[in-house]
Image (tube, rainbow over all chains, first blue to last red; front, side, top):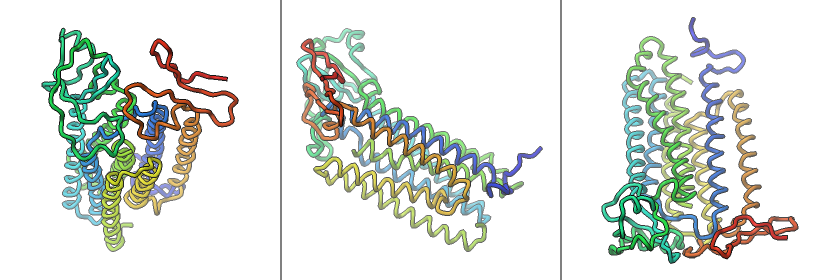
Length: 268
Length: 143
């Protein structure tokens, strides 16, 4: 038995079924991300004064990734329009750009994550704090690592500014200070910029990783419809075009979430 | 929808929206580098630009500007619950002891300052206290 209303419009909704389905799904997605944005707001306003980090994320990279997603959104909608005009070649061309954009976005994001995993904060026993890099750029070290490795000191390259300092003092890319040696006995806490570092990084990784998974999932679907799934174009072009529209709606939503994530996490 | 002229007109709209989204992104970053003194103003500007961009994506790329009634009904429910969620969030913000200070860029925090906040209309104060032993007590109720 064929699935009904994949192309033909239902009399009551005036829509094919998949379109109602994707919008119901996107409605639930709005609530999912909305809940996390709500968590972000409460964590931020609840943070003690001067402890919410500013300027730890690379704004030009974040802006570039925003442009990458916007380009991918326009190529998705152009690929759908190409199918409506019966031009399968153009559809393939535009969706190839979409896939390249998705890949670029995830690659750039993974480099950003790597930067965070090798960036550290040291809380000293005298109450002072500093951020910077541990010599050799190791991943995921923490206070326990120092004990496990039996280190009596670490060589640390501190950043010129601590993130709790006012924003206007962050002029461009600050040069790193010369390396200093910090005895382990003077370190109360050591943490890379990982979720356990602070509520800021916990919500940053939760939001961006969930968004990244959406990018990945969307790219898998678009990739399938670009490759093996494109066979449907020969047998049922209208149904195939509808599939592109549905996957496109999801993709635009992913772009839309990033449009809010970028200023909220990188700029404010 | 499928007549070629109609689609061609749509394509032109998509390209205009694309241009507007790029301009919006550049504007967002430009405002960031301008470093407004007021954090509240910076937040409002960034959220307004993001909302305009999101509306363009939803309205034109997702065709919400000319959709069927069923979809508007679905989205009305979403909008209702989303507004409720954000309304509750804003309401709950006033319970936060540090709310009045955390939206400002504070000084370098070697020792966290004692944040105090008086919830509106309540006959007691809620504040954070640094215990003599050095432990932070959050949300202590003081008559």
